[in-house]
Image (cartoon, rainbow, N blue to C red; front, side, top):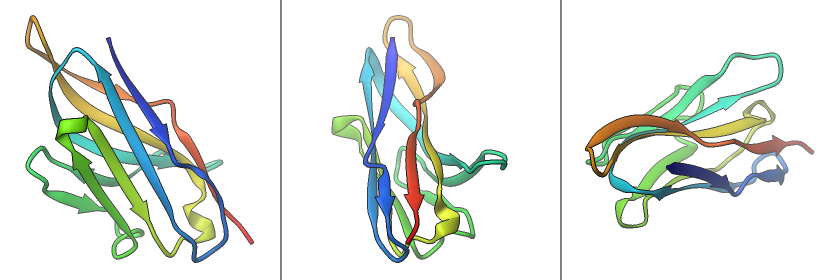
Length: 121
């Protein structure tokens, strides 16, 4: 019913930048809170950043000052601008969103399939 698709991942050198996108499609009534998570090899999944429907943001300490989360509600899309990338940022990045559906109005959480980000020289 609802699909989240991440894009923008890839291989970059330390200090480089990437911009991730998460596009939602389906019978969407509204997009509510959204967030980016990541999971590195051998590590647990961790929260990277969140953004509410009114634009309030929150960041993990490890990415503050380097990453910026944003959203375009008209396009049902969320973004993560990643600057000054470090090798420790290497992980699979996942999109998460709370979405309210049409008929009946039901709010559920959805996950994307993930996109690989590799930071290496």
